[in-house]
Length: 300
Image (cartoon, rainbow, N blue to C red; front, side, top):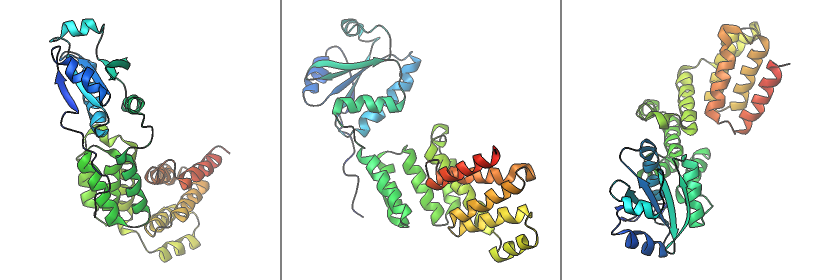
């Protein structure tokens, strides 16, 4: 398929090291074309080791709308003194040869993104964020191949994009390639595994593995007709319904089991329901409504 992201790669000089001698050209003159962020750092500075890679990644993701210049304060003390840098990391933003914004200390990724958006005047979703939305839309409509191609394009541009990793994992799950999905998720570093979208994909994989060998729904329903308190059969029926794409019915069976005996088998039905919530996503309409029903049931 045709590339949908466009050229999101940053220019070769989007991130560079500079010094006192080249500051005027690399920062003041360059900022007349695009905003330039200057990061004052030092090798011994712990927070610098956190902020540096984060701001570099954000600048590259901006696709040329902003540049980053890195200044080692140990090697450029006079310049640091001229700009009154008293502690590091210290970040200045220049536009048209003048400082226009800045901050001191490490910031989370979301605040770095906001800082860059203020400079570029671009408050809308990035090209990659738009592509993630397109991939999710294709996946939800059942066009798994298109979704997988979109997520693959995103990951070639941004290999650590959590939503795209999660989306590709969902594509593998939909295609029955659960071993490949497991291998991909297992290979992620700790930070990426904590991303909400990745955790949701992990829960979906767990459910897919659970439902791989579910029993026959007719047999499970017959067991429940004989004994409505056969909680094992009800939980297995929920898994079978989920495997058939009947999400709401699967949730209903778990809520029924909880209502009959919430403590059965160490609250197995409630724990299974929470796994469904994680897989569906916490903002999913079914998750929201089912959480409301669960809360009313538990606290009534």
